Image 1 (cartoon, helix red, strand yellow):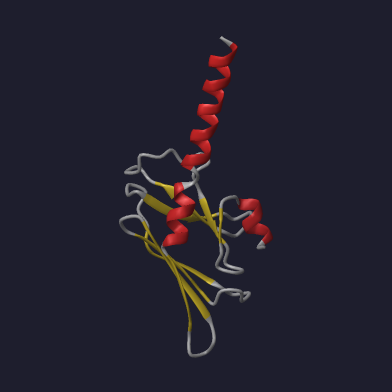
Image 2 (cartoon, rainbow, N blue to C red):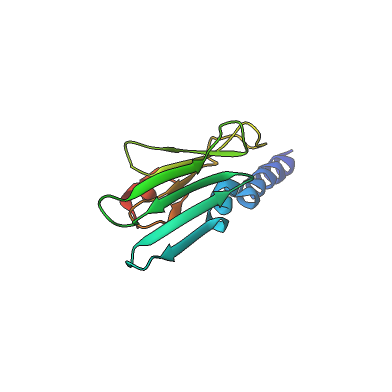
Amino acid sequence: MKHIYTFFCLFLLSGVVIAGNQTYEDVVAGKSCKVSDSQQINCDYFVGTNLHVGLAGVGFPDTAIYFMYSDFNSDYYAKVGIMHGCVIISPGRASDRLPGGNLAFISPRNGKVYEDWKSCKAGY
């Protein structure tokens, strides 16, 4: 019985490691940054079927966060966390994933994508 329990626990843990954070992976894959003629960094994030969020002037004190399309009923949607100032990407209603632990955070300080809000707030 002990061996079955150990095997079962290892099986569950391996599934967690394999599954990862699909939201984070999708946001990283959909990230596109360009430098404008005025040497301003602008980033767009295309995630899932239709989420489009972006940052204009990454790293500046007045970085703009814009939402071109975000729908709670789609596979992903975006919002801003006031406490940390990061854009939060969450699975929407059309997704087969639950939002808990399956989030991504985009920092307006550097345009990077993070798996947790504390790292995003710190901006490293």
